[in-house]
Length: 395
Image (cartoon, rainbow, N blue to C red; front, side, top):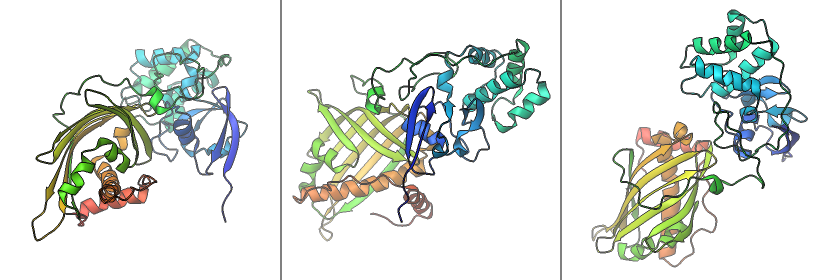
């Protein structure tokens, strides 16, 4: 029996929105993934750390244990909606003055809880402030600066909750609004921007060679001779057609390839748009790819170099071997979960699909019409376990 999708309509930062999807989707994921409101941070996902705290009907709640489907009729305010709030501005300034933040991961939740304290408890002393903050964990500051900041704002009180601003909220265009900057996101004149729209500007020249990063080597034995596979590997458009999630927009006269690549690493889906430069040595059947790009939705970025080669195996073993050597760096939120073991599992699954499509195209068969699905949690977990126990997978 198929369960009907959940549906709930509620207000987010003054704008009516509708969640239509799985019943188990929590509010934090809906805000981050569907609305690109990434100021709401996700830590424990068990309602313990408080990083995901935001305001619901004027009260702080943990959005990681609040189902989006249960928010029907509620008024949700995320940290992005407080940029022009005068009381929040005083809290931000106090956090800065009293060194109430360091890495900043807990800060949106701390500000939401602090906002509640200074409006609801005008006579709170240090003991009461610490009690109210007990649901928000900070691994950096030791809480002294946070408590001092809230006490400083309370000393200027009492404070009433300011009236909600009259605004057209920047839903979907909130990427890049600083929690402590006080910047106001511009109201969009069009629907939510795509990742490509918000991606960083493309570099006009080759990126400097990487000198450090994470290395990954793979070797795959294929049943076709190298001279049959090389023409396909030599064709950048054919390679993109064989690579799940890849798309080429343009190849200019200087050999710069502009395109995008969509993948999933752990729970995060990212659509990187960027540039790459490809060089070939036809005599040696080797090549290199160097490039960089960014994902506008998650504000993640990546830079990498790939060397590849095709070599025939010995006469007793028909076919060839494709070897790939990667050196890469990931920055931004994706780096928090893009650990080498996870990335290796993703690469293995992508490489399986790519080589199957490569061989099919070299044999004159069409590559798979549908790109391979991004690896799920179980596939990633198995990939990591396989690496740990060193189960044989490919040559």
